Length: 253
Image (cartoon, rainbow, N blue to C red; front, top):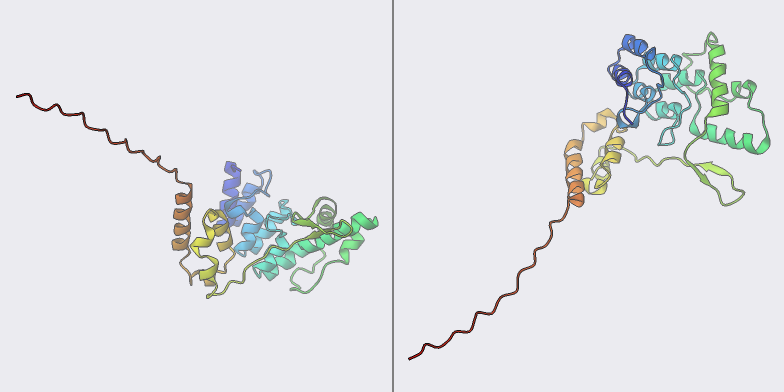
């Protein structure tokens, strides 16, 4: 997908942490749930870099707090995966849910006829994180966000169970990153033809561990091997069969 000029500017402002520029671009950009570098939305990019104020600005600007990405993660899942506790708490205060909860509630609603109203949601959030955002000042907006989550969002990664036809969510398998495991996980031989996936997975490695492994060298090797696989083969030239020499006439005496 090709980004518009305003989308590129917004994404770069999120990455650099320029709150003023983010707010200015939100007025010019229509859809702010587009995917930029590494498939991340502006909201995911802000979460990835731990920018709490920018996360707030994006949510206030209309970012979908329950959008499920290609890895089966909502913004709340993404924040918890990157251990951004304050951001996770704030997102929950704005109606964000985990992908598992979305999937479970949608199944419950489909098979029981339960009416998804605000009362259900106000009692469904777990409260195991910081209490930084307990204020009720923004309650009307949270209610609207929760209604949107109830009626319009479903988890992408489903598999059909053999019994009863019930759809069950599947969790993406994430490798355990350690200093010792990086060499095996990012072995160039394992990523031939899959360099895009290799690059995306690398962004999930904690910064302190990224310094322990030469990813650029492994990535370059994987790209070289990928190019070799797709390189056109030169046609084999057949050798011409040897020609018999013409018969020699004996000299006349």
